Length: 213
Image (cartoon, rainbow, N blue to C red; front, side):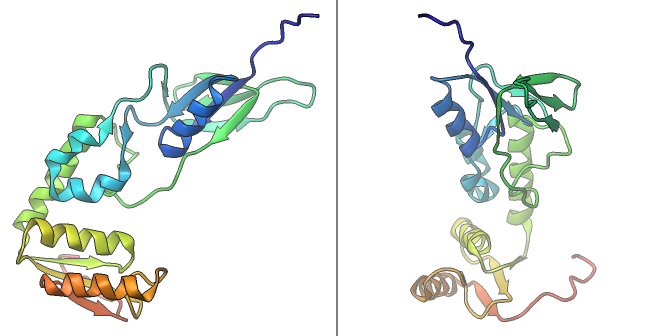
């Protein structure tokens, strides 16, 4: 007996790593709609590199797969108990029906490390943001990096790698860098940074940013 059962509809909200992978794996079995708030894919692990080498941005800001819906999801109505489809509402009024919904919106982080989602975004505007940050860092006589985790350590390393001799201070409230990692990693990074002139201050917090904070 042959049945004409329709393909299940899946809406994936979020077009970064998890969302794109989920859409790719599900697509052979279901009708998939990928939704993302910005009109391009950004390889976020390279954001810090792009801040000191803005020309690198062209390699990290890539188009979404064809058919991606660009929009911001504002609400999700679940499917009904009697088999009715759910709905994803977008900020522009569009409605996307689904049988299953995957939420892969990721995390937020202070701009410019992650884009400011409150303003219109395009690959060119994001690249311009990286270029502007690079100009600020290049012109700065001294740079203070607050935080001794992976982001802070990497950013300090990128800055002194790009501008050797730049006055860079890394301040961390923990007693060692990269506290969640093995102590050997912390010691290696501390030695690497100090050998390149980075002043590393451990066990302290910034209490007053002053007039320029």
